[in-house]
Image (cartoon, rainbow over all chains, first blue to last red; front, side, top):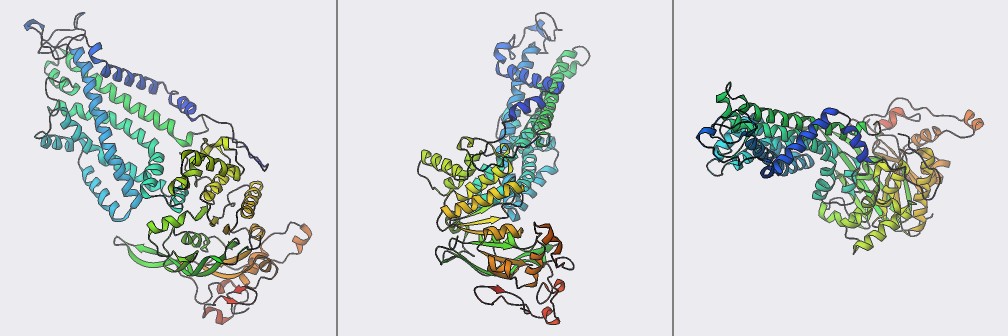
Length: 302
Length: 329
């Protein structure tokens, strides 16, 4: 990037505007796989939002005696399960569960984890010790194990999907806090943060008006990747029978129900299994694409 | 640009800033880095005091202590008659609208996610300096014009500006609340030579236009300091070794360190340059972790006598406000 220096005194003009957004689009859509991932996610969101319109049958409606475990046919595109419910309809409704769990958990964890990380990094000292050691303690447990434990405890107080959401949120808070903490430590060394102190900004202004916006790009990438991980975790939990109460449609539970008919009725477990794999893959690849597109080192090169 | 009033706006007395060096898991203090070790100077309203010295001699630390970005270890800082050296941060906040800082690096001193207008206008918001939204907008535009930036660029972001323009945004931000004291921390060291002159002239014009605007100008470029300063203080290893009127310093430097510094300034005339006698100092600047005994300059001094390693020379008056810290003068 060639910078034009104006040596004239008087009004000088800024260099020609280069649209960040245009550059972002160019890098982002350069990889075919990323475009594909984005397509999958768009489909997922459409399926979740318009589930009642898209689903050919009511996913909770039990079939008649002869309608259980039907093979795929023109009437039931993916066949029916043991209770005679349409698999395709349940798959579409399952997208709702997956997205809802993913988005709410990510938001809740972000709202708690990001401020914790910023506060720990910004103030340092004892506060940093207390917050980060607590996060480390939480991090010791594998995410799924922690969620499993929390879900088992929370089952007493909450119902169905909320158990999963709360359990998963708590399980991913340390991830947010860690990443934000590291970002804060590096951002706060910039002169513009010292400039804030010199002009008398309050601490909360510095943390949330200046550090947070500068930490945003990496956090967006983190959120995208964690959405995939959360959907996988939710599927794992419901496969293990925790969380989404029957007859609610969840992909993990569908795999569990279907795997008893492993050979005879492969669509029953294959369909939700592929859906999980595809969505998780899509979130990861889109997160990857976002990371490349938001990388400042590529600025001006592309 | 002679001082219009003779009252002191800033009076720094025996300022000390030690940074502790800690070691081990218990953060046991093992030593102090004596970044600033007993600095005393006075700044009159409307004047410019240049602060020069090598890298690591404590210039920047002194500036930051004055702004209370660091909590000084000892000493007094009287700003407009009030001792601010131990004020609480909440009390300090009110005073901060009256003092400002211009940074060396125009790239890292502006928040990349903030528009130029909101960078310049932020101090106004923090100190409730303006009553209404339209007043705020007018003031920001006025500040842009003051530093010769086109007000139509208010919505642009820092990366869309050149280095010199960014530095002007920094100057405009410093001027926002009409401060009486601006600490310029090497405001031109990171700029192209052609741009340096612009910023220097801008700072001078502003001082002529705004009555009572005082600069503490930190730099290591002696010719620039000579151009802008009324008085100059020379620092070495956390202490001021010589302080006098800018003219006197360049014509009649007394401290051996000042002499060596001045002899290092190249002269633009090649014939004169050829005959120029340089004083080459031996060795490196000692570490402020363990400064030499006595006069901290003595191991490198070409005038040193054995006594120099025993007494710390006080800053003493040698007439007409010329102060020097050397027993051999």
